[in-house]
Image (cartoon, rainbow, N blue to C red; front, side, top):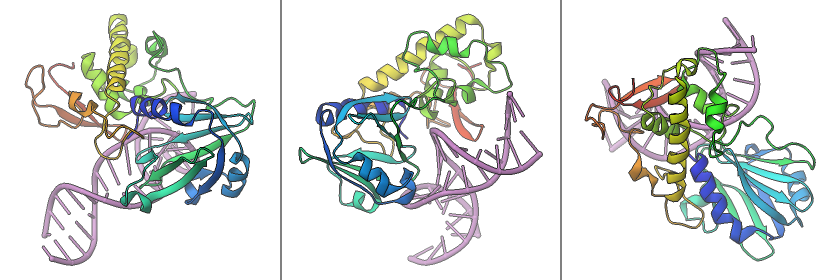
Amino acid sequence: MPELPEVETIVRELQPVLTGQRLVGVEFHNQGSLVGDPLEAARKLVDCSITRIFRQGKYICFALDSGWHLTIHLRMSGRLVFYPGEKDRKYLRATFTFAGRCTLYFIDMRKFGKIKLWPPQQPLLPELGPDPLKPDAVRQALTGIKGKRPIKSVLLDQRVISGIGNIYADESLFAARIHPLTLPAGLPAAKRRRLDREISGILQAAIDNKGTTLSDYRPPLSATGENQYSLKVYGREDLPCFSCATPIRRLKISGRSSYFCPTCQK
DNA sequence: CCTTAGTCCTGCATGC
DNA sequence: TGCATGCAGGACTAAG
């Protein structure tokens, strides 16, 4: 499940290969993977060159010389690869062929991923909150959050902060020693600063490790991510906490599994 | 307005 | 072994 570090890794690996490249062929093989009409989208894309590749939240964004933008959200199982394996062919949802002869394949077993085209001079992804890597962004976003939603749910809300998913929310809360059910309004200022710092650190370390490969995620060029070996709580139900040996517990919070240490996180 | 539940989709794990 | 059931997950939509 690609989150900010995985998407950032993908963007960094795509940049040197695809920046400046001109599209010569675009095919959508699954109706639902594209928002809009496939033939119309392909017509708009062909002959355009990619001027810039960047990330916004968990979205991969391509700026085109026509002024349009193309965004890809990988959701659960989406992947972008240059060299698909034999099994990948079955789940091929879109093909982008470039003048430089290289081809980018969008593979997505569960069909949750979404490709979308954005017209010129229209704000891209206007609902997205600030990027958690920006200094102090998390602390500021959490200040003034009232309501009864637990901090875990708030961290997953892309309108509040964009890019954090289930894995890094749990890892950050453990690092900051905050119980996932804590209400943001009840967090002391010092704890908010601590959480801000831990989120940046956890995300940056995961980027350095090229992301967390648990099942589907693979970087486009590197063989695998390595951050799965650094996880402290995610997926470790009943296993001893690395800090205090208390068994890690799992709770359902707004429908998502949340892993935490009941001793370290009060 | 706020919050929760259902939806999408498919492979895998579990239970009988 | 075979079949049915249910679980996982991000973002969107519908409903309370």
